[in-house]
Image (cartoon, rainbow, N blue to C red; front, side, top):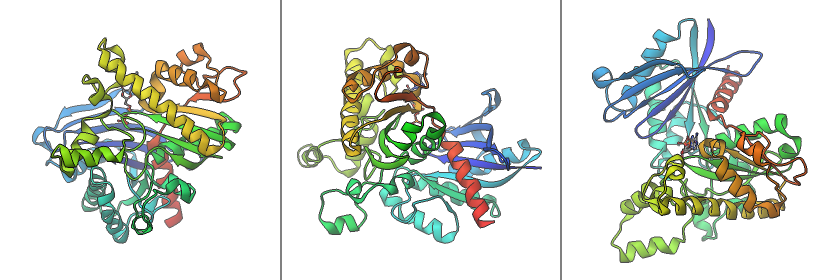
Length: 396
Ligand code: ADP
């Protein structure tokens, strides 16, 4: 029997999973991955092997109870039949918020679960689903070790100034400060950088995680120094459907003059803004680039413009720039966006190698470029598997 680690990433309507075989002398190895979507409505299930070949695909209809417990029960049953010679030794969870308490992954027990529950108000759209899934695993497999891995933890290394809002002190002390997110992705990139480029690993590097959710992180010697996301995952760059940075006066105006309430604002800022709101076409970068609609082009222009401005801000926080890294769905797959960003930040010493960029890198800056630019695929699941294995070793 070989040991296996289950990695879970729970959303409001989906449960994404991966299984890694734990090998003592090497990195955990992905064996399968998949997701259950529509867990509250019409659940569908898909699982693929590490090469992407479909292992199972079905409409779950009456085969599972709706909700996170039902999805977890179905998945654990399916894995029990599927894994054969592999034995699940732990579940590692992506948890969006670790607050001020958790600056590293933690083995889950009743006290930790209570602490995670108390953080729900800080991330009401994500944290409840993470917690529900941890509880669901505990109910179905009480002996399985569980480890919570946080999107905020990587950023706890930031200096206090980078974490502060200019608000009265009692509000800062009550936890209203910048946390930053996408930390597992940034941590993975930081983990990879020494094998890619020592100057990027030890110097001043901005990492652009450009996916459906998008943010950037300024790293000094592989540690977070500043990030574009703040108290919530709304701040910073425009995203698929989220607005990014906005003058807080706009929110007061909408409350006062447009008869909006907190729930209405939440819907507007999280679900109706960003690339979708500006384009009126789609939240998906592929669709925008394929569209001839002038508003789709404007949405792409605004996305690039905001990235470029934020790179300037993050480079200022670092006192200069040695390397720029692109990652996540758009960052890894869209040479056009990378090229437009790199050309606009040529003043920071980046000289794009056009053909390397078209070919996907990893290095996309020319040999004489003073500042290097890279495309590196992120792997949050592997980071969670590594953390889960390490947490098990500590508590074994
Ligand atoms: P999430 O934040 O949901 O994990 P992803 O990292 O998967 O998001 O990124 C989704 C975004 O990446 C979408 O805007 C999508 O259009 C874009 N994307 C993914 N693959 C490609 C591709 N091959 N070409 C262009 N854009 C892509």
